[in-house]
Image (cartoon, rainbow, N blue to C red):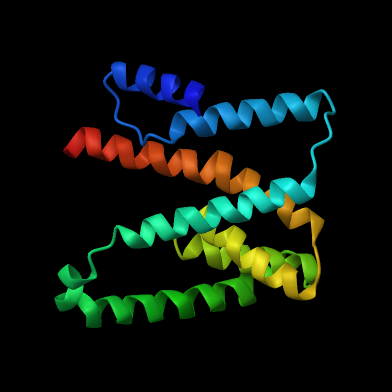
Length: 170
């Protein structure tokens, strides 16, 4: 995280506005790829435990920062949008994702991850996969693909697009 902070400060010194976690994400991706290349074995149970704790902290902190009383007038429109988004993601996950991915257990786990992505973040995708695999058993392929796609592509690209629009219109 320390090296990530240095990278983030450097990016900001270039006049670009990026979220503070981007540097840490870049460093983590590089370290993970180096360890994989050198065939260093990591303990899955410990990593899973740390990941679960980190996800819980992240979701707790994200929810603590909400000032729900300021959103009171928007309650009905937000509920309508949330219900619509949930229905749309469920239909998309079943009709498109599940069928395209092969109509098997891996496809069901991928579909649950797609619902998580559709509801806002990679963390939601992982949480959905965890809930499904805790009940029905582990599925290797989705746990290999989803964090890579979510962490390396979606989060970075989303941050870059948001930053671009903030820099252009902000």
